[in-house]
Length: 46
Image (cartoon, rainbow, N blue to C red):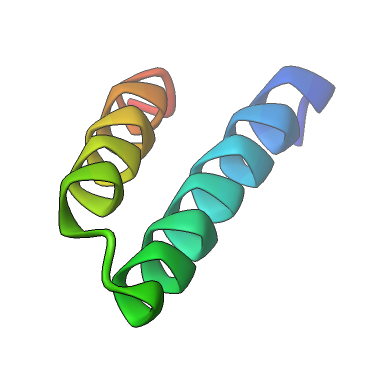
């Protein structure tokens, strides 16, 4: 696996973890933004 692919996977996972933590804290708008960032990063994995 190339290092760049691993970096994008890590970025997606961190963004999703951030979204979950924000949802648990009640920040729904910021959680949705974090999911959007994860989706944007995931596009690079295709």
